[in-house]
Length: 227
Image 1: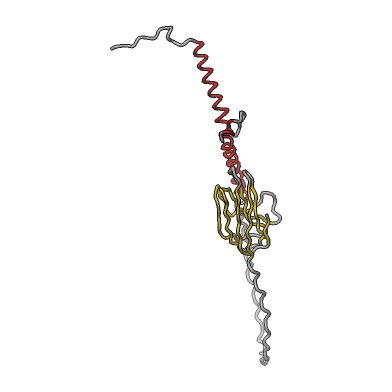
Image 2: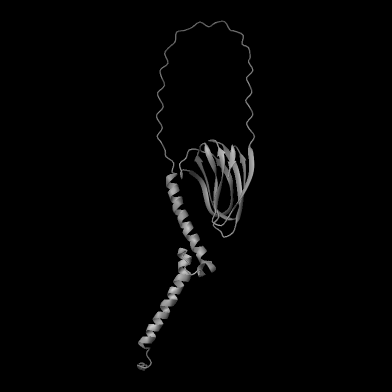
């Protein structure tokens, strides 16, 4: 069997060459960490190259989505409905027996015209639009009574995050009921039934790098539109 000869001492790299190679590898690794990894994962860009290459914006979107996910979980726990046990209905009281009474002679009845019920108010209809800048969040609310119904449809020129929710007139900050929500969608439509007196509507946030215009159409039983 043939064995290759061992390299001579002159062919092996010197200690100086090994130190130099190690220093070059370390410098390259630190450069990648500062210009690529930190901007794209943590939105930290000390050199400014990450924003120029679009990596810092990627890191900002990751962080904002993670924060929104945590906020959604906290809101879902706070908005869980509380079911209270209803009090049992009281037993009907016994009806005492009444003595027989004499029936009087029939009296001629005069028909009395009942007043007509007032006609129900006509359904309201509105079209409202707003424009969101990159990273901006805004909402449109309808003032509604409990049980009133509104048909709605909205469309956006770009993908947005949305939350359809309602809150009572005297609600504390952060106390609301969420009907539906979505991420990176361009529209939604349906029927909204108010569960209580208060304001009910939509919140949108633009997570893109361009302006987004939203157009909302509503038809139904509501008192006013609040922007």
